[in-house]
Image 1 (cartoon, rainbow, N blue to C red):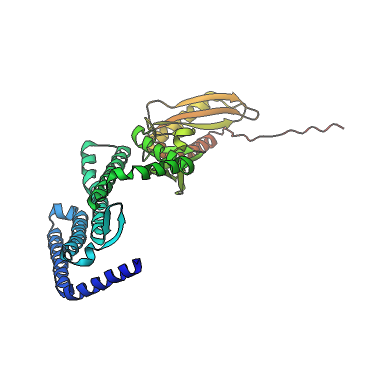
Image 2: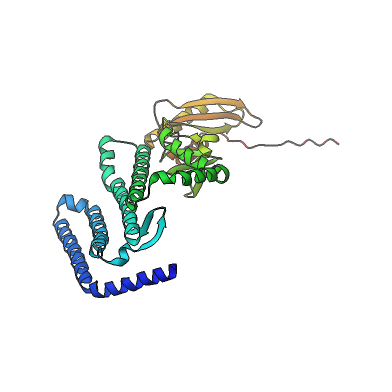
Length: 358
């Protein structure tokens, strides 16, 4: 029966398309011609140096292509609105008869909402963010909430447009709930954890974190997992529940400034006061050469211990961003090695004396 139904629909479709095809292609060509004329007009204005159009050429082109695509789809719906194949029943949900027309309408609503949400979050909302100077994490959170809200509303509207009673979905929702309880515990946990991360924001996009000894930056927080880009440009996918259940170091949580500890050992017999002054000189030189090293709090030299082979010191300095830890440490180590060599202060290495008794 279904095969006969689909065959009848296809026959009606080809017959009506044969008689209505030429006028349809004519109007379709007019729409595409109008799109080309509008794009040419804006391109000409942009080439003449109009600041607004030159700065917004990509969003304008995106918007025109978007309008053209959905304009063609809506035109198809209205043009074939009197065709029998558009309204012939394909299947049914309860008392609702699902036809090609209703399916196309539902797809149009959802895809239109998806495109509109992406265009707004990509081209319109960043202007508001710049005006109110919102940080990158707040921007990402608001974009995600806005997108999910738009898609949920579009899904509900599409079901209502098709004619499906939402109250009839309660049984289906109950079955899904049982399935979630038994087979989707981890997915549900990560989904809820993602929502908590977006609202509570213990981590946010752009933060420098340490996860299992791996240093990286939060690049994206999805509803199931978080994407971390390491300093080696590798991407790690971490389930959202990990950030709520495990120990995570967030170097950018409230204050981006960070204290570095630079360990150094010198030989026994060295002038410790001179060593302290030289290490502070290294900190001052690095401060002049780099904007990252801070003068307040002041650098500090810590005489840590009398080691087995050396006098152990630590140079404490503060930097303004955790993103410069490796480069700053490397630069300071180069300076320490150079200045100690210039002042003939030995950096010892572990030695073992072996006494042989005859």
